[in-house]
Amino acid sequence: MKTFTDADGRAWDITVGRQSYGLALALFLPRDGGEVLQAALPVDNWVEAERYLAGLDEAGLVALLRDAEPHGL
Image 1 (cartoon, rainbow, N blue to C red):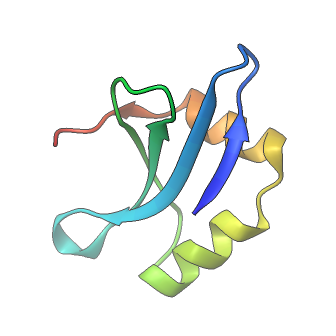
Image 2: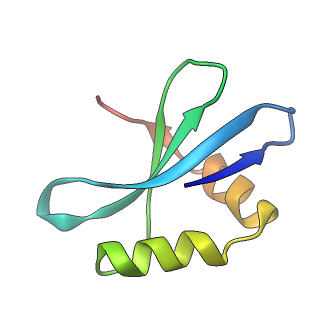
């Protein structure tokens, strides 16, 4: 899990999640509560997803968050 702050100063935790058919997702959990967001990751499995997220800097995480959609929990 990684933590970062977006351009509006909101803190987020980000972790890997999974959807049907093994699709790996980035799950964005706001540290102050609120709606969880998700973004599909361009990877084939969970290990690649962990590596992908680990390799993103804060600008990359913010860009991924910008494309995120509400997660249907």
